[in-house]
Each structure stands twice: as C-alpha cells, then as structure tokens.
Length: 206
Image: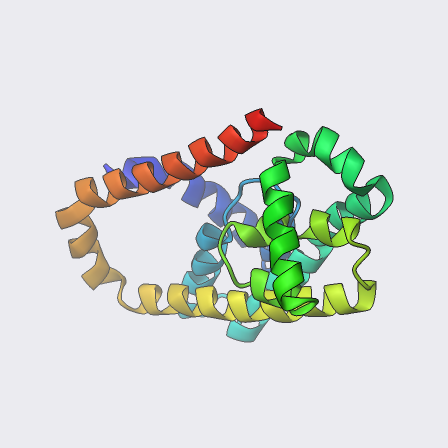
C-alpha cells in the first residue's frame, strides 16, 4: 500500500535527479523554495540514497540542496521586496502564503531578528514561505541570503544523511515498512491533511 502511494513521487524525483545529478537536486529544492509544495523531506533523503549507492557525493548533494534553496528564494524575496505587504496580502494566496503566515514570520523576526531567517530554514513548512516576509521587511540581501544558504546547508546535510543511513539499511527497513504500512500511511495522511486544512483555512480567511 505504501509503495503504491509513494512510487509515483519517488519515480519522478528519481528521474529528475538521475537525469540531472546534483543539478536535479538543486532544481527540485529551488521549486520547494518558490512556495510550491514539493517537500525537501522527499528530495534530499533520496539524494542521500544515491550517495549510499556511490552515485553522488555526500557534500555535493548537500551543497546542491542549499544552492537550490537560495535560487528558489530569489523570486519570492523580490516579490515581497518590490510588491510590499499590501501586494502579498492581496495576492499571497496564489503563492500559498496567507496573512497568518506573514504574521507568524513577523513574530519570528521580532523575536530573533535576522537570525530568524537562519532558524526558519531548518524548520519544516516555515522554511518554504519565509522569503516573502523577508522581502516585505526589506531584510538586508547579503544577510538574508547568507543565512538562507547556511540554514539550508545544515538542513540539507541532515536529510541527506538520513537518506544515506536508509540506503545502507534498506533491506532491514523494507521489513518494517511492510509490517506497519497501514499505520504509516494513515499517520502520513492525517498529518498532511491537517497541514493542508489548516493552511488553506488561513488562506480562505484572508
């Protein structure tokens, strides 16, 4: 059951990364950083799996992920920078960014200052929409993109490493997946459903 659900996504990611190598990792991570729901949690562990097979370098995969995040953050940052809060509040839903997302980002920046951009890059979900608020707040470009790269590099190293360990223990993991596939699928569906419901609820409230 789990194989049937994940196979199309895995095949597509595998096709892109296999055909393009590290450039494919960078491309997919750039897509994620453009507020498009393509989770890095699926991209980078697969790159790590290829690392475990000797088809890609560990550092190369990690740096490709971080570079992709920076490149994907450019359009979002400049949309916020030149469009301003009014523009993003009006059209943000088309980028899957709600007013609640902007408010949450404001709280992070108020609490941590520029370090919020570094911290957010290592957090699921939040990392995908932080670029728009950064642009709105006119965050210093050099600081923002430096922290984006460093935070994304740590995130990339972590997830690539997870993929490496999974690749090294693939046979053992298969037994676990097949024993608990129903529970795993149910948990994934519930968590993903709650995220989508909460996120689009905020978009409708805008």
